[in-house]
Image 1: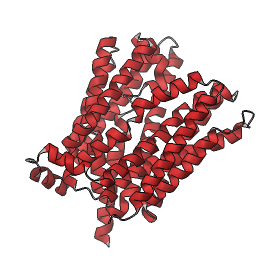
Image 2: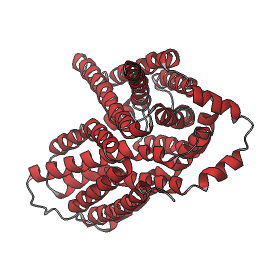
Image 3: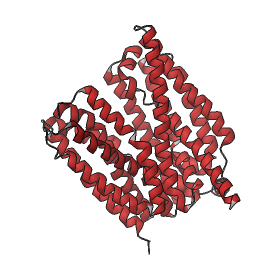
Image 4: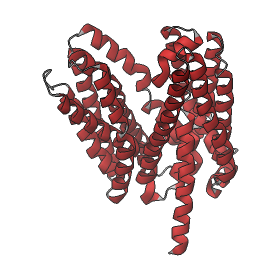
Length: 415
């Protein structure tokens, strides 16, 4: 029993390292979430140019998901994670010099390769292999919720540093932003060697890599694509991710149609962010206690119903009602995010092709980042007065029900 406890403690220690790495690696890439105006001013670029940088990042992610899985099947995940953190931090040093727009495009493209190619599939595969069959839910719940917690902590430190520098000299926006960038660089350059030294190479991962070195990529691809469970897992993720992505539009919807101030909307959306560690971790533990696929199916139904409610709230509703509904949707969608990768554990994919499976699922699962802006923008423009938002939320709710059905099918033992 003592040995088992030691093993579990070791596994949770390893998971904590991966959580810190996942929480540290992405905030620098998405710095515009908290400092968009300061970035435009400091780098002397337009909003359109910054959008192009973000699009470059998204495009690189889409084309690296499958190669990322292939890499994760052939190389040590520990080394891939450490290298990725180091490369992202070193690129951050270049970024901190406030280079030209053309250099920014190169930096964002390189960030896409460093995090999308080397980090993405490797960290998911590592968590999937670290967790036993009955721990998949809690491990992925802790991964998503914990990552959110690390990001929130780093953002708090960064904003405090920024506020302090500005309070000393209100004209020093560029210098203040530079200090913020240094905070994130420090987190990356400290985490990289820690991951390299403290993270274990899993024996079965190494042996699989060695035995699979001569395997043919096309054969592996056929193997993954022929598995019904992989497609169901991908449907769960693409539908769940769409529900989550729709929450990005809440701020504009509430401000434009419910007469709420920007400050009030800010408070509501920040409160929603704190639902991430709660929803993700709680869903993970409940999923292991019951059944990850069944709990995911229930969460997707509840999230879809709540999203549909957003379309029917009267314009004269009290702010407290809006807060409650947004927080419930936040809790449920973060719960979905915490559980949807746990479905991989029930797919019975051999470790030697697990990375490739993660890559293929990711291409399908995160494709909404490409097409949802193309759907939502015309809807909102062509149907003013909140009607476009309502149609958008109802479409997302319908997709959520489809995802719930896919999760239900996954929960049934295959014959």
